[in-house]
Image 1 (cartoon, rainbow, N blue to C red):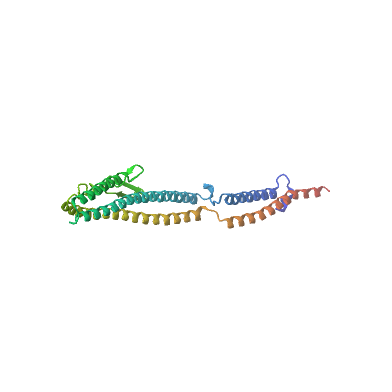
Image 2: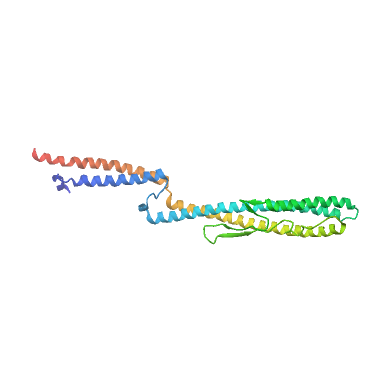
Length: 274
């Protein structure tokens, strides 16, 4: 290499120093970009396999997050339905009290008529609650509600929900009467059956909610684990990136010094003409 100093048309040492400086500048730019974006992979060329895997994991996380929102919506639907059932249950309990009174021989026909009027009004209220318990325009407890909720990112990750009706006809109490002691006794038996039937339907809602709660927990864990893996692959380690920048900046300074020295070396040829 020493003889190359006498060839000034091509300063090989300067070119080598320049190439090294360009490479260092490029590496510094890469690390600074990572510090600016927080991402270790900003271009596919940096790590094609890592980029592909990171985007796949991001897609999965986003799908799981939407599924989590779906589960929350499903819980809202079930809570509204349960609220409607519970309101009807409270009315049934009141009606049972009235039927128990009317079935007692101590009450007169006039008193039973008054009790019957209250029960008939409560039957109308039950039907109103059944009709008015809705979500997004869909009736929930009139016996027509059936829906399938997407509870995961896969096409098969679903939960079908079907809610049974709770109006007076569904509970077989639409024709009860307290006008006589005998009819009051029959009404009392019908109301006991209706309460047991409605309790079973409230239990169904509780079971759906328990499954939704389990899916919510599973989704939460899956989202956390997926994001953890994606972060390991794609996100930048700031401490490491900053350390690399500082190291390369030192090398950059020495490369600039080397380039300056290499550019001045051909001037030694002038000594041959003295």
